[in-house]
Amino acid sequence: MKNIHLPTALSIVAIILAVVSIGLQVRRDVQYRSAAGLAALTSDAASKDATPAKPQGADAANSATAELESKLTETSAQLTAKVARLEKGLDGLNRLMRASGLDTAVPLWGEGAGTPGPLFEQLGKEAATRAKFEARREELTRRAALSRDKDYARYGAERYGELDALYKAARPGRGNDSEESKAKRTEALGKMVEQFPEAYATGVAVAEQALTEALDGNASQVEAYLQTLKESAAYGDIVTDQGVEALPNIQAFLARQYIDQGRYDDAAALLDDLTQNYGDSLIIEPTTGGPPKAPRTAAELVAELRQQLLTTTR
Image (cartoon, rainbow, N blue to C red):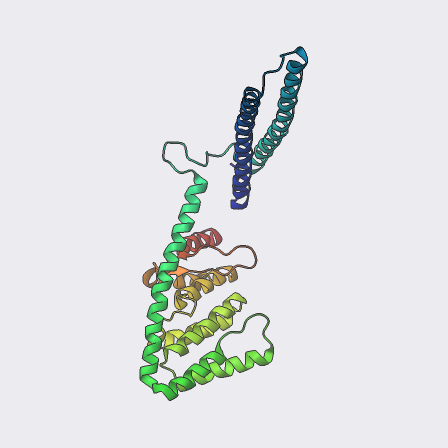
């Protein structure tokens, strides 16, 4: 069976809507033309009734007949053109269905009454996963805000101001970073770890830097930041400002990297830790171009990577 892609399905839906629109317009025009013709005839009849009677000759009858035939011919030509557009749209729909595999696939609406087809089932699952992720992210963001409040209570207004200034300086930059800006960011992060080792904000800064290095594919740097996070109990439940759970997402990245590098024992150890401690956590996988991947639970990702391990090590 051919794969059905969402853009193709959306194109099909657009064509269907266009075809329906043309059909409705044809129907409306038929009704309009019929009503207009009747109104014209009624108006003519009323006009004749309101005016003095004239002799009913053959010339008058022929003139009325010719006028009616002209109107009918004009209406017929317009409807014929719209029907041609409708048929052209249907031909395009058929070609697109054949190209996409929908002509041989299970129907979109399912095989039985009330049963969703595979495309709508897939879309429903993705929507449910994203809704779950958004709800989870809101809860994590709320929890992170409470932890930031604890930083303020621990250090007081003045010291917290210093912490916040270092945090802003240590945050990863957007776009292409210069070597100078990277050096300043690293320096600010080092000061946070040295001066505010127990601060939640410090853990967030370390986690964000680790995830940035993961996006760049720098596994060795990610390992160093992960070690820093694991060495402090205060960093165990770090959530970034984007609502991403730090430890499970960093470990998921490294596990995939280890498999690619042939470090199978290291990958298996990380997968075991993900299973035991973060099974329900949502993983956001980085992509290089194309649409972003839908979030998945750590348990789902672990199952995929374990299968990849089995296939690779045979």
